[in-house]
Image: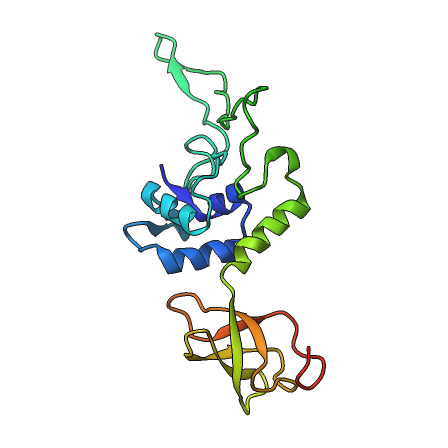
Length: 208
C-alpha cells in the first residue's frame, strides 16, 4: 500500500510543513518515499520511519481502505459490467464505497488515540490537538546565547550549549545585546543553515 503525503497529513492531523521537514531530515528518497504524479508517496517502511520521527510510532491511526486517498485512487469504486449470457452487457449495481476501519471501544477497552500522543478520542478538541501539535514542534527548539549583533537588522549570531556559533534570523536585532537568551528552531537538513527565532523580540534594549 502506498501512502500519499496529503493523506498522511489528514490522518495524523499535523501540518504538511512539519511532515515535509521530518521527511527531509529522516527519510531517504527512493527507499522510503518517491514522487508519483507530482505527489510525494511513502512506502510502508518509509511511513513507519516518518511516524517514528513525528513521535507517533505508538499511535493508533484510522487509515482509509486501500485505494481511498491514494494517488490515482478515488472515493468510490467504479460500477462494473457483466454479460447476461446473450452477449449484451448488463450494468451491475454500484459497489459499496471503502470502509474505514474502526476499533470497538467496550467497557474494558480504553478509547484509542486519534494520532497525537496523550490525546484521546473522547477529549480530542481543537484546543487539545493544537496544544499537542505545539508540544511536538517545541521539542525541536534549542536555547541560544547571543554573541554578536550583525549589521543586517534581521540577523544576529548566537551559540548553543556546545559553544558553536550559528546565524539566527530575527524580526529585528535592534534591542538585542550579547549575553541575552533566545529560543530558535534549527534549519531542516539540506536547507540554508540559518536558525529561526521563535517568540517575540525584546521590547526594550537588553530586556524582553
